[in-house]
Image (cartoon, rainbow, N blue to C red):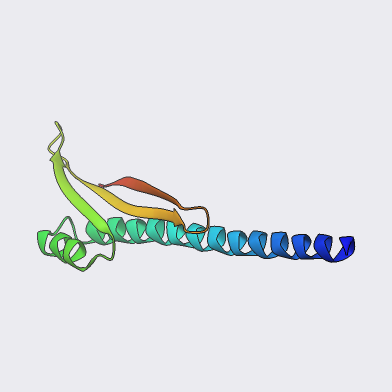
Length: 106
């Protein structure tokens, strides 16, 4: 009987750790996709020469919460500050964290 209980506990722990590992891998992929999307947005804005139509299209079609702010520096150089927000959640552990990635298109 003792062996059956030990086996059951081991199996439950293995299943829990497997589910937790899959969740962590999925959330890591989500974070990487958010960073890649922000980099893609920065490249599009830079290659368009800070075109307002492109910026508006990026903001309206974004799968993430994204905000774009134009900043003019002292040297008459226009910079575009991009903030992308996403939620990082691990349902198994009931953890939800809000992250913001900032970047600048020159």
